[in-house]
Image (cartoon, rainbow, N blue to C red; front, side, top):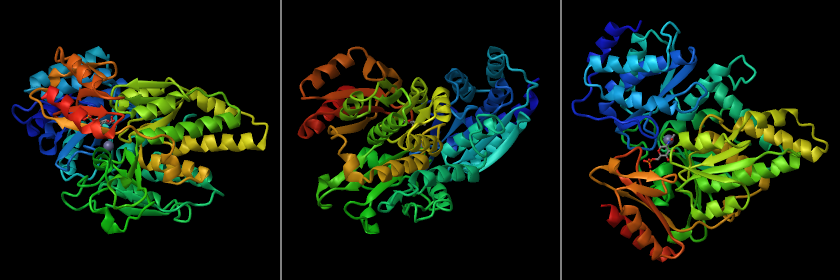
Length: 537
Ligand code: 16G
Ligand code: ZN
């Protein structure tokens, strides 16, 4: 039986803001933090049911709004293998969060229980964590209350990066099995990554120091901690924007999103003595994204800023892994997954080397597509991504019997790469180490990496519209289906520019529509972007 009476108490204690409509978006439900208590309470109950439906496996609930402004927050359920929640559950989540009274809410729960044949006697087990936002403690209370009403067994993971919570879910559920992913603790996470990293860079001369912008978020905490396991002789890190406790600082003028969208340095970073050639990177607010950058040539010049985004990381990783596999004498089908935001030059570069798939925006889509390859490298241009090794690939790697020392060395590198890469989701800390390993191994700095290909000039605009739901897309978001006739008009505009590409899609995380534009001629970029944006308004 479902404890309706108990649930109803919390339902009334965490009332839904009148008139507010919630929607399960790209990564769960995300909006202003002070409107989310009812949602957190209700998703906790659904989370408990999800765990029951998976035979009592641990599932996760992460309270975060990633790169969004500090007053925003969100809640993201994590499935039992550390991946995003099964998409067929999303409509139930949306409906549950919008239910106007307890009766409607119970009706939705009953439907869910029926649809997934959930045995209510199965125990539920849920782990929850949060980032550094001021609204997090209040929302965590609502989560805990929902789980208590369901009698779920809980683990309060406290302050965590999003990828750490994904790691913990997967590590808990595989503990003691053949696929054990790692010790299911935060320390275990640091140890696993650090051990693999140290093995990978052993004997390779250290390059220059790495400057890290932690977005004044939880990434600062994780970076500080992993440095306990990675001595500065192995990786010298200069951590900036680490003010976790400072009100209003999170993602403000810093972080991966600020750098990527603005194609510029974090605000005022010159004052920290950043110099030409310094290798720098930025995390986002929950440390599941990373972009790198440096200043090339005269720092006073506007175009000296050079971004090495998710696309460049994908190119770097794809080449490296393909080479290692070849050296190790192992047949691995390495493939790459991108979204429409991937720079045209990166797609061209990758397509000359490996199969490339394009999916809609959002990790859940990329992740699933990457599972179709032996080694699936997936990165969004914004810096969210990872590399997945399939069970078959892992088997090949563990059983291979290399015949030469060079092949053996390559094989060992590949095995350690699997461990340094967070296999559950994109992870700024893990991706940072991956990039450092590859650069070290090639004895490259940013300039050599940057030279893989030259990006086409590109730009993203945010357009506020009356109803973003009126915008629907097809072909992995590259074309609009509705509003009717709009795509034809966009095509007409784009045709007027050389080597141009542009598309329009509704944001899955903000109330706006995004316009992406890319052209062969930098001087025409603003004109293209503005003309497409005009069509949308
Ligand atoms: C979320 C997604 C990110 C995506 C972004 C797009 C995850 C974990 N995060 O942050 O991958 O690029 O949304 O936002 O899936 P948008 O729909 O507002 O453009
Ligand atoms: Zn994020």
